[in-house]
Image (cartoon, rainbow, N blue to C red; front, side, top):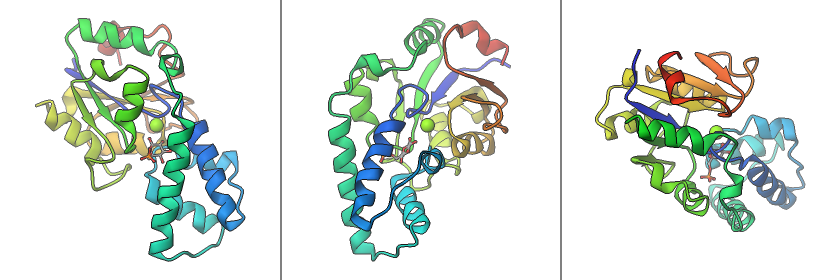
Length: 215
Ligand code: BG6
Ligand code: MG
């Protein structure tokens, strides 16, 4: 199969922001006396901000009004923004820039499909923005992964059919989203976790544009 575009998730695929989300949620949890564990944080990967808060409140057995939730969503994001304020290109995951430069040179379109509403800020800080032909982020979708909306909008925005796109994802919810959108998906992480992915790689080190023809 020859593809025409690569669609990338952001957090955990291009940059490792999970630690900042984790810290920001832990800071927020102090409001209701709850300490999120690292295992729980794993289950929040790829999950939207509002859905993450709902899950944390459920784990904490804490019920909050919609008004309170709005305040906490803002507070979490303020915590997160201050934690990522110093982000720079050194935080791009290994092999990413080399892979982007190869696929660009070979004429593939490059799209972002992220749940994050902070995607553009992160792409600016890490200087990854110029690589992208299209950005679909949490501000442009109404349904969160595992719904395929973010990737379907990516394909459509690039003028392509789903089967012409290949998705790179680190989260189970994202792998499910790509599969249900009819796309090939390469998992970034562990095969035991990303069971539905067509192939799993640990990172982009040593991955070449030519590998796209083999996936
Ligand atoms: C995803 C992250 O990419 O974006 C999640 O994996 C995060 O952890 C989600 O909750 C939403 O991000 P943001 O930046 O809009 O709060
Ligand atoms: Mg991710």
